[in-house]
Structure formats: C-alpha cells, structure tokens
Image 1 (cartoon, rainbow, N blue to C red):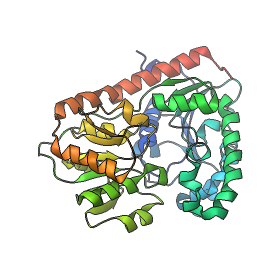
Image 2: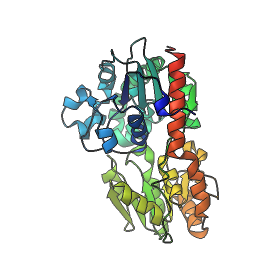
Image 3: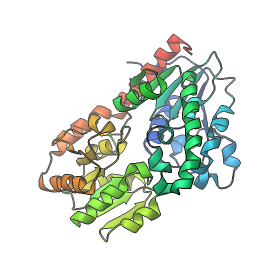
Length: 376
C-alpha cells in the first residue's frame, strides 16, 4: 500500500470550497494538508482561526469573494459568483490538483498537463436534488423561489459541464458515487472519510439519558425532526453545531433541548461518550459523526438512506429509521433507551474507517492518477 512519502515530487495545489469551520470535509482536507505540506490552499472564503492549525498553517489563497462585504457570514448569498471565483484561480505552475468539493471546488481550471483528483463529498446539492430544502416557498416565499429556480438551473448546467475538468473522481460513499454517475455521467472510486479512532475512544462512565445531534444547522440536515422527536419523548437533547437555521430551530425547541454551538474536540468527545445515542435525521452523503460516535462506544439512530446505510448496522451499532418524521425517530430513540449495545462491537465497526487506512488508500489513488496522467 502506498504511503504519502512514496508519491513522486510534484507541485501541488489543494482546493476547498470554503474555510469557515471544522466539519467532515475539513477533516478530509487535514489529511491532504499533511500529505502535501508545501501545497498552497485555494478557497472561496477563509475565516481565519475557524479551522484546525494543520489547515491554518497552509498558505491560503482566497478568491475575490473574500473582499466582498462580511464574507464569513454572507458567503452563501454570493453563490451565483462562485463559478467566476473558482475559475479565477491561476494554476499555471501546478502538476497536481487535489480538490475536496461539495460545491464549486471541483470546477477549478487546471492546465492541460496537470492531473486533477477530486475527493467529492457531493455534487452541488442545492442545484440538483435539494433545491426545495434551500430555496422552496417555505424558505423564500413563492416570489423568491421563482427567482432562485433559473439561477440554480444555470448553476446545475455549469456544474455538469465542468465535471470534465476532473481526471479522477473519488466519492466519500457509494451513495455519492451513484450521484456522480447520475449527474456528471462519470465513474468514481469510493474512499470513505477518515475518523481518528486514536482520539475518539470510549469513556469509562455509563451513558447518561440525553441524546446528541452533531450537525451544521442548515435545512437539509433535518435537525427539526430530532427536536420534534425529543419534544415528543420529553427526553434531553443536546445539539452541537452552528448555521443559518439556528433561530428557526430554537423557536421549535422544548425545555429539554439545549444548543451548544461550536465546541472543541475534547468537549465533543466527552459528549459522544456520555450520550445515550447520536441522532442523525438527514439523508447524509456519508456522515462522519455516526462513526465518531461509534468510536466512542455509543450507538446511532439514523435515517435509513444515504451514507448511514454504509456505516450503521441495524440492531448492532444503532437503529435505522425508515422516515424522517418525529414519530419514527421517537420510536428509534426509544429503542436506543430500551436496548443497550456492546461498545466493543461499536468500536470494532469504527475501526474500519481509521485514519491510517484513509491515508494509505488516498496516497495509492493519487499515485495511480499521476501514473495515468491527464485524462480530460
């Protein structure tokens, strides 16, 4: 199996959509930053101090979006400018481009001699199958939806047309590989994201009675379903994460729900260890939080679609719920309360996603792409 030090000496650029917080995509980016410590990091927007020191130590080159008003807060409002921003980066001196993309990063323009490997977390969700979750009438009103639809249609066409700028797609799950085939008509290899199982480990004390959500607070994450289920059961629910849906979610929360915002890694690990179970109501592309929870010996209650079907084993490491409704998730959470699980089996399942495995397989995939040369 290839190691990072076995890769040929090439000039590398890393491309990431935006640097505004540490989520699953940024944990993948950390690995590539360690693999290529001299590479520049290109991104649409960078909020200094928002990501780990491993990433912050890179020479970060933000796009012109960084110079617009309050980019760290309003970058999502600048979505129609992303194509021009990502295409404006110069990559003339680069032999290898590694992009980590769920929006526009995969559409960067390399030179004909460069190899472009894209680790794809998802095709652009809001332009394809989740338009209504972001821009539907309940979010923008009828007039706003009518205005957004042609813009998102244009972005979808651009997203598809620029897929040929990638020589090798690597998907974070089989579910995303299927979406890449559907929307881009491209084949993708599958490499599940890494979890640091040396850091996320079980605790000693028995679990407490609260449930846990670890998620960005955006519409498609369906955190509202977890809140409604907790309200119905009258059980404590702790929510870790930030995002534009915070005020709306707070307005629906009962007295047993608390919002912690962003927390550091040690606090997150402690919460995983003490929680009754992690709750994940969204159809996730992969979902890193369930594997972190399992590494800490705690089960998962997740929607039976998307990436969760590749990580959660029914009745062994958690419970898969058929519908994203309060009733269904309340039933799943009740199962978690009634049926204790074996932490050792959870830890063993999480070990399949350990960081060394990802580092080795990522290096092998990149070495293979470099050997094959540019394909597009």
